[in-house]
Length: 296
Image (tube, rainbow, N blue to C red; front, side):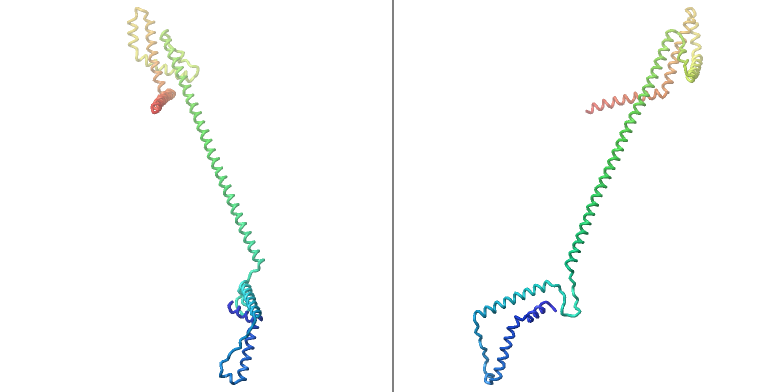
């Protein structure tokens, strides 16, 4: 049953609206009875009697109709607000209506779930932000630690380099002093004509044996190399102090040979090579400095 049919049945059920129909039915019944009594009226045209009414009755009728329409509209509005539940047909599926309290409770539960989900999302975002910041701080700390370690290593390497250069310079200086002392001893021996035994007589045992062995080898070489010259000089200067002149000449030659031997030996040492490397580095640095100044 649809709403339109339902509303029409409601109109007939209204007692105020059925009064007009009752009057109309009574009038029609009276006319039928009067026509049956008079046979002459069967062949004549029926003329309905005109009801002469007053303005008051017309106004009351209008007012009644307006009130009936208003009540009908109110009823329709109320029917529209009701759920679509069948009340007349048997077995028609009724649509249940949720009570307002339960509906409000469900809305509140949904709102609480939404608020809880939003709060959890905000908390997760904050935790992620804190974790990201902590990770960035850890990375910065690690990078700073590596930088500091690198700086310390560089400083240590520079200090080690300076120390090694210092040691090389000290060793080179000591070697230069020893060479100068040896040269002075040789010059003094050349002036005095005395053999420089102080250089070969060292306080340390190893240096003593080593220097003695080298001296013996050198003297044997010198004796084999210069026998004829010593005889010639001895024969030539026999008249003018032959022993003195011979000793002086021999010591001079031996000193020269000893100096050449020591120079050649010093060139093979580690200190001499380091000294040469330092000198080459200084020359290269001066050259690069000049080129750098020229470029600007």
